[in-house]
Length: 68
Image 1 (spheres, helix red, strand yellow):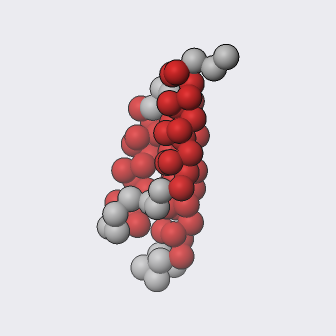
Image 2: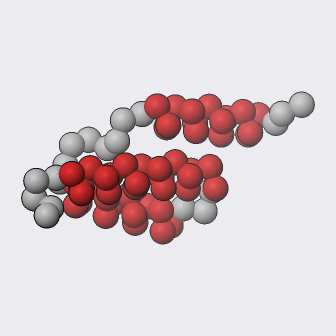
Image 3: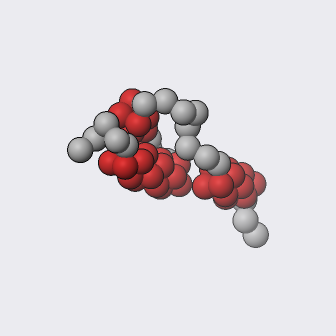
């Protein structure tokens, strides 16, 4: 039987994966903010989500017309 804590973490993980990236802001500021969160996160499930968000934010940053 799964513990309540595990069920909650799975539900949180699923919701976070489906959530859009942070509110619109400069892509430079966005990836830096996420990177800071990554550097401090201790929970492996949350870290996985943050790393995924960081990768997507960096992809967007590199697509930005301001980055050449």
